[in-house]
Length: 86
Image 1 (cartoon, helix red, strand yellow):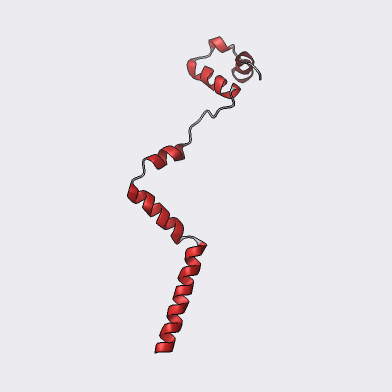
Image 2 (cartoon, helix red, strand yellow; image 1 turned 90 degrees about the horizontal axis):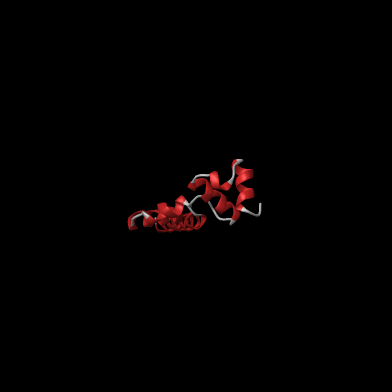
């Protein structure tokens, strides 16, 4: 597909001029190799509050292997320390 007329005929089986504005926009985006849809994750992230972003980061760290290994090491050290002192 090199032209909008060819793309319109292949995609919609109609001439470009007979398409409505949204269909013409789709054809133009396809010809230009652009994304038709938007990334809703970016839009969702823009609306998060500071507390929600902080909670997401804490949850991401709390579920990581780094946290699990650190927590396990501290717990093991605490058990050993308590066993020696008691």
